[in-house]
Length: 182
Image 1 (cartoon, helix red, strand yellow):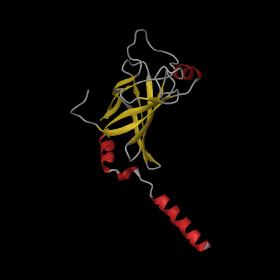
Image 2: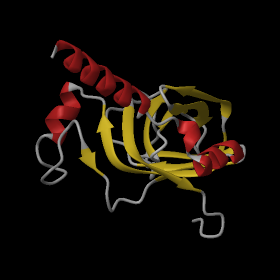
Image 3: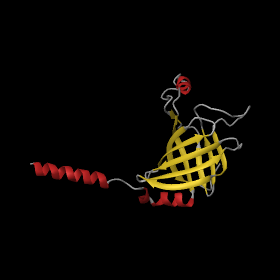
Image 4: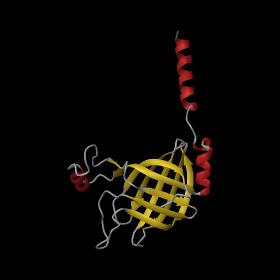
């Protein structure tokens, strides 16, 4: 009886270990990443939890189902696109501005339209980890991006700013549609 139990436990452990999917198994994703032709759309925003952000966002200002720790972005137009050596991003921002900013600025979110720097691709735990830096469209703020992309096309990405608290997004990655860009 003990031998059967040991055999079944060993088989379960081996089957769980071998079921892990590696990012290299998704050939189309590999092509998008290698060609630097992909787009991300966030479905959820997760701002850094501070006392001020919690007080405002937990007041139900964003509607039911949203909280200070998770904000639903479905129906909210947003994107992060990598095209060759350029980044184009328009992401909503929820959090604290630590310094800077300008008067009468219409761009309250994270808006980038230009070249990125220090683009690096790594693979960790079966996922792509892509890091790079960029400046905002006005040239006042620096952003560091960290993208974690799984073989199932799920993307978790965070933005660290020189003037704002950090924010994290969750969404999907897809091939960049070069014909229907905004």
